[in-house]
Length: 146
Image 1 (spheres, rainbow, N blue to C red):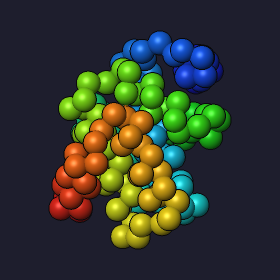
Image 2: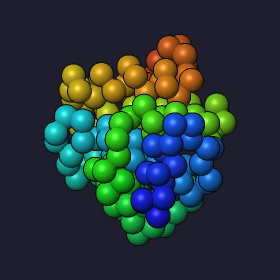
Image 3: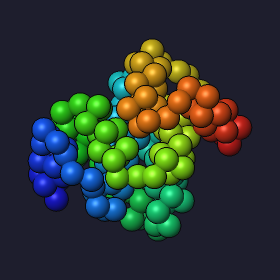
């Protein structure tokens, strides 16, 4: 499954992702953000699991399993741009804004904003097709939820 998804993401003109692939790509974006500062800790893993469980109505075990799959995908994936473009093509705007809010939740979970995380969070909204205002509002909602 990972190889198939990677092939889809690395095609010159990727096709829209199916639900399962889009779900995995979103989870991989969250993992990439959590790993960006080279301090991927248990709190960030729990935050990702909680987000995945809520977003996809998964059990705790299924959410953790999806995160584990996403960790493997993220480790072998070529770049963030292809992830976010694939998600943009597969997911409606309102859901992409919710994804961005989830991404901010992961970034803010450890109480520190590393420069690597900030750099990714400047890129991701643009590649998801989300404007600066909606990105800022998503960040504010995420901060309030912590």
